[in-house]
Every structure is written in structure tokens, then in C-alpha cells.
Image 1: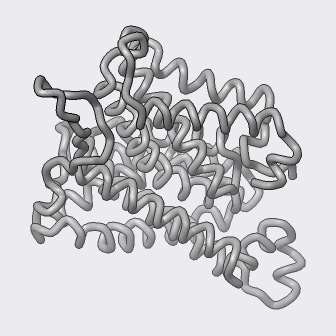
Image 2 (image 1 turned 180 degrees about the vertical axis):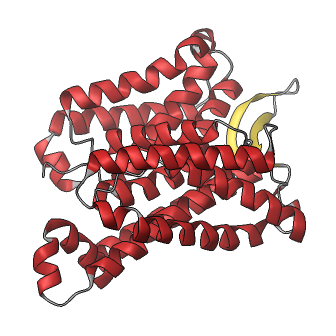
Length: 337
């Protein structure tokens, strides 16, 4: 961050001003003039917090994708299918056990094992052949989509929210006043707050592993010079196998999360594959902080666009991606190599 500030002082100033303006809009009482421009503060805040939780979901999907695609250079276009499969498996496990939290480790293990199988039987045989990987994983995604349609049908499913996370939580943010002049505080679903916290914990943990542990050092060294690391006696194949499995498992967990506060249905795999691609392109390949930043930007833009310009909300998302590709092709926090 210090290096970014030194190299891009103007952009740093713009970011600080935008963050300060956003905090003012969230925390300060709105004047009639501001409400005339932006509408009711409650609607604006719901869009902001909805964008944060949607960004958390995009981060869970996109972080696994950036590990597989950004670090290992494996083009896995079946990543969205892993998301939807994880959600369906979570729905079944939740109905059988009646416990939402049990679905997370079960889905992670099952989808991670599928990811290990993909890496060992598919990607290991096509290393460095991006076009073949693209075509094969597109075929796999079509096969998986048809299998899921055959098993679960075309209807929508939603996972039951845990009892202790049902209902809204009161946040210390004033959205207005009642008839007596008393402040009215914002209320937001507890499950969405829990999902946001979970995404932050996972993101910080991934960054610490990649940057502060020997495993992370091996992964980064294997990406930079795989032949030299292999010659030193390290079985980098097993390291990459574990990384691929972890990224696939994250996609499965994201499916459980998405099925809890949204829904699971045919077509969601394509939607979240595209979201993962946009997050990686905007944030930067192989960068966990970049995936978090990209997911945050895309989530906020989608939700704010749905509130204030619903017809063009999707256009805004791809406009941001086009601007990043035009002016910073490596992504906002990606490296030049």
C-alpha cells in the first residue's frame, strides 16, 4: 500500500476522498438537499450493505478462481459448476442433518476432492496448454450442468438460515428519525453480516498463508520458476494439487453461502463464473487483496446500479472491467510479470 501511494499519489488522493465521502454519506445525517438527489438514506444504505455482502460472496468464488487461474495458470471454466454443485450438496446435507454449519466442512471436502480429481486427471495432462484447458473445462461445465439439472431439476432451492442467524441486527447507523424526533437505526439481516465476517476471516487467512508461511513461499516460487524448484527436490505437483483442491473447496463453500441468502437454480454457475472472471480481471491475477478489491467494487456497483439505474446495472460492471483493461491491464493490484 505504501508503494502504491508513492507511485500513484493522485490515485491515492482520489481513493481517500471517495472513501471519506462514502463514510460521510453512511454516518452523517442527510440534509433535504442530499435526499433530493439520492433518495431516502435507508434505501442508499441497504444498497451499500447489500453490495458489501454480495462482494463477500463474489470474493469467496473469485478468490478460489484467482488461486487456480491467477497463480497456477490453469484455465478452469468449470469453476462456476463447482459453485452450483457445492450449493446443491449443501442443500441436501442441510435437509438431512438440519444443521447449516455442518454443510460447510462437508461441502468443502466433497468439492475439494472433485477439484483434486480435476487437477490430477485433467490439468496435469495439459499443463501450459491454455486453449485445450479452456475447451475441455467448457465441456466439463456443460456435462456437470446437465447432470445437476437431471438430479435437482429446474426449480430454485434456498438453504434454511440457522435459527440463531435469523432476523435483523440493529447497527449503530442512523437512517432517520421517527415522528417524535428519536433516531431510527439501521437494521440488516444477521446472516449477511455473518457471511461478510466469514469472507474477511477467510481472506486474511489466505493472505497470511501465501505471504507469511513456508507453504506460501513454495507456491509463489513454483509459479515463478517451477523447474528450478522441482530441481531442488520439492514435489511442487503435490503443492499445486493442494492449492487446486482448496480453490475448488472455496467455490463449494461459496455455493452454500449463495444458496443461503440468494437461491440456487440452473444458470447460476454461468453467472458466478463470469463474476469470477470479472473479479480477477479487475483485481489482478494471483492477488488475494486484488480479488477482495475487485469483488468489493463489482458488488457495490451491481447493488447501487440495481437501486438507481436498474436497466444499466450490468453495463456498469463490464464498463469497469473495460476501463481496467484499457488503463491497467494487469488489474488494480496485479503485477506486471
